[in-house]
Every structure is written in C-alpha cells, then in structure tokens.
Length: 148
Image (cartoon, rainbow, N blue to C red; front, side, top):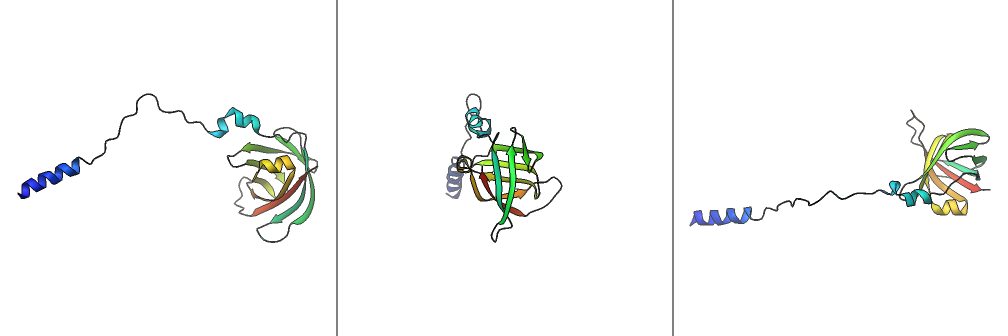
C-alpha cells in the first residue's frame, strides 16, 4: 500500500511540471520611444531662442540666488552662455526632455524639463546635476529660467 501511495504521489508531482512552450515564428520587434520618428520629430527646438537664468539655488533648501545669465541657443548643439559658445543637448527621455548644458559656472549641468516649460517659456526651480567629466560632484542645482 505504501508503494502505491508513493507512486501516485510521484505521478502527481511530475504532472504539475509546467512546460515552456516554444515560440512560433520570429521574436517580436521591440520599439523604444527614442527610436520613434514621431517622437523625434516632436522634440521642440531651442534654436533661435534666448533664455535668462533668473535664479540658482545650490542644494535643496533655501531661496534662489538672483541671477541674470543669458543663454542664446544658436544651433541644435551650440549655445552662448553670456556670450561664450558651448555645447548643449535636448532629447526626449520618456518623462520629459533632458537638457544638458556644458560650460556653465556650475559645471556641465543636466536636468529634466517638461513640455510645459518649453511652451510657457518658464522654468521654476527644476533640479539639475553636475555631469562634468572626471568629477564626483553630487550637488543639486535648481534653476529658474525665463524665455525672453
């Protein structure tokens, strides 16, 4: 009797093993938003625009320090920061747009801005971080900017 119970138990356990079905046909094609031409075409351009950094706060607490730095966006990759030419990038991230600016007094800054900011011409205290090559700066910079 013990043997019969053992055999039935083994049959029950082995019959519960799930088989992995083999896919039929080629694997599905996965597309990512940054490869989608529609999204690429919808990225706003900063070319020809002038923005003024009206305030900067270093760290997460306190009021911004007044500022009056001018940013003139010349091409899709170059801009002038108070008259000095440097590089920048603006690309879609899935939750907004990454704006990275080289050559600022605070280093190479990178942060997320949103469609609303670009349309309204107003950035109110959005966080940027220093991505200067070779630095391990973990300081957050908060920028206030207006399109003029």
